[in-house]
Length: 435
Image (cartoon, rainbow, N blue to C red):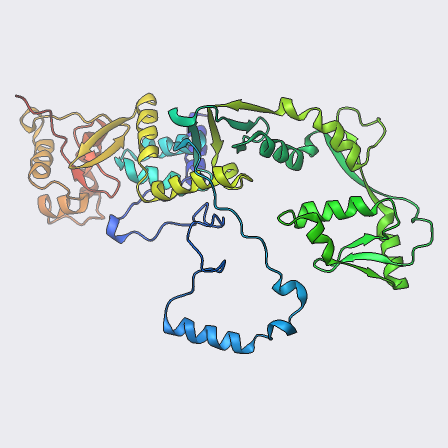
């Protein structure tokens, strides 16, 4: 039973954690996907509201060809050259951001360290987690200069916002389904005489006849969902009236389908329409978030926050951390010590292992072990293969005799008298210098 449990843990570790066979810093590939790169924060200045021009002759020639193929401004559809209002740049919040290891990922790392009996560089382990889209947590704390500023955190998904209004919007947009089940039902088509139907020219959505009671609600719904960055009066300029019997009939069929909301806590209660469901849900919203000076957010949640200012603060710190994971390494160092792993320094690099290094004098051991210790003391960084080639040059590396000759290494590593590093190199641990 114990063997089966260990095998399952080892398999889980391989499934979760990336390859632990690190390479030198100069040989590494560039980091993977930037978890926060797809956000537009208006960080760089733009010329007259336009993006910075691309550099290079080839790009300039391509731009010229593209311009030659483009229709003149007066030939383009109206919506193509409507200028949007420039977005305000993200504000700098009075917060500090740091990173913590995600517990399941960390536990998987620890299992692998135990299984391999090798020593791994702490910073490389931190790099693994900070580039894993689910390998870390984001800690956001208000600074001493924050004053009355607070963070607002959703109790359901742990999302964070810098204002109460943004948090309320988040909960209303994302958690209505926690209280209601949404169902689509069919009703009778709308009755009445409708000479025309309003249609959004930007999306093609039929909004309904202006004289129908659902028209204003539909306009507000499409505006909020797709064009909230412009005033609603500006959006109404993109609405046209279509006087076509087929289009009117199409709207009648679409209007037959209605969405209703049923309380999860009371499925037998009368279904509500969206407006009434939102009104009922709004009464519960204040209990679904909390105000604090500190919040811890899962990595996946932090990558899709609606609050641009908070995302900007996280992105800026993650950009630094992805190059040199300092805060992550500090958090992992404390966690490893709590989990009874051992940290030591070799040169300027910190390593972690589950076997505590324990120096031993060669003269206190039997001859075959003393021979290995003396060789590695004089040749630190050698591999098992190199040790075999020097001490037993006549042996075939695949022979049983060669395996027998290397047995002292396994014994020495298990007891901490030798350190086997992640890349297979071996070294004798150094004792503390006596003054």
